Length: 368
Image (cartoon, rainbow, N blue to C red; front, side, top):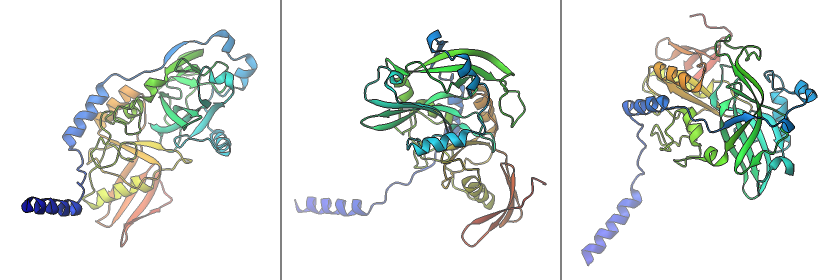
């Protein structure tokens, strides 16, 4: 009896001082196999498309003033400011398309006080420094539990443009109903220019899409990212921490990379991607960097997210999810404590200080 008590006391003492297990990043072979498997699976499409009933179509005056036929480049900040003043902007949002709170618009929903559609780069990559082709999110305000943000699975002009005028009930029988135009962008337009509505692969006005809310909400691994968001981030929808670095996919700024830097060049890469990428107006922004090097873990990114993909993986990504452009990023080391960095159109000189790397813009473009 006494020996049992001593053993139990020893067990308590040992476990009290035991350190929690350290997260071990997923091995490259296993991580790459999962990425390639997910990129070869068919793309998920949750919303069905049909003709918009005549009574809900835009009249000539509405269509003339609608933003649906041209890119919204100059009024996005204004829309966001308006939404912020209303105190309803969700943390993923980049710009407001519309907001509705009248009973007719809310349809047969119970306990819902408002519906809005926003555009965001949370899971749709930024085109260098130009924020084109954002993805669409719906925000539903519930009386008893606040706002709910749901990704719709497509970006602006790929192939839909959600109309700012919505005349139909938005929520019917557990579905979201949205009036849209089909203006599928030509992927071979010049890089850096907004989609030209006169140069599209498919054009159909006055359409309606119906999206089942239960399927939009699906989150198999309960990590806070929906399965649809995980598909666009190439993360594992059945595993909350795809790269095994101890951060959930939702919180991880580099969800496909958990390797610690081991050389000065890798330190510069991690610091550059963590601090120098353009910041959004309070929104999460996704960048893609194709690289053959280690999938480095980046921990200090303020609001940004980077996917580190192998070049062949990036080609499969584009084949599945549509044309996207990677961030332009190069590092040229000058010894072990100095480097030139070219990132998103800006050149920096990097010097290693006492405690960290320090970056200074050179005021030049890439000249090396």
